[in-house]
Length: 148
Image 1 (tube, rainbow, N blue to C red):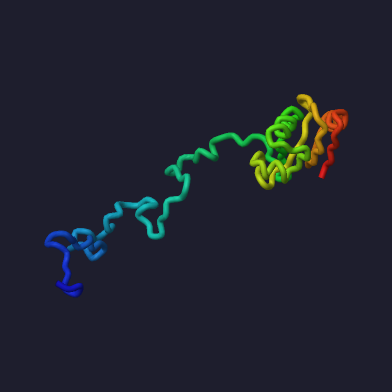
Image 2: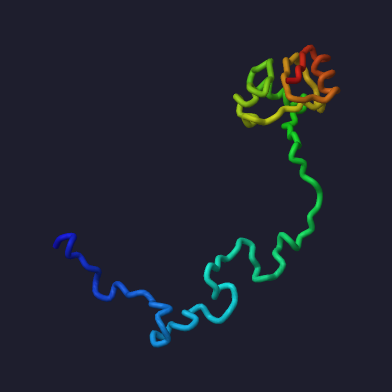
């Protein structure tokens, strides 16, 4: 036995339907496509979300609100959370890079400091934004807050 004389087992292969070869073939005329309609035409391709001519769902639902393309989304950090991070990781200088290194934020996240909670130690905090109360509370605890 060699590669050049291998054959499939008897009855394992069937010849395909020969359509559009005249009326005598039994598959002439409409060539198994039926009469009229999109699927009978050449070049037919079903569109995504096509519901057979019914108004598609995304067009039936109301459009509401507005999504600003210029929205800046911050990851909020309250003072008590900053204190907990400082104690857990043993750092006194909290920056976005340090938070990323600790696995707390993603690489391109923007950090905002908010004033909920209390600081018990002076921390050097660098953030992208901060509330006025948070800045005041950090400085009151003996630390500093810079906005980069």
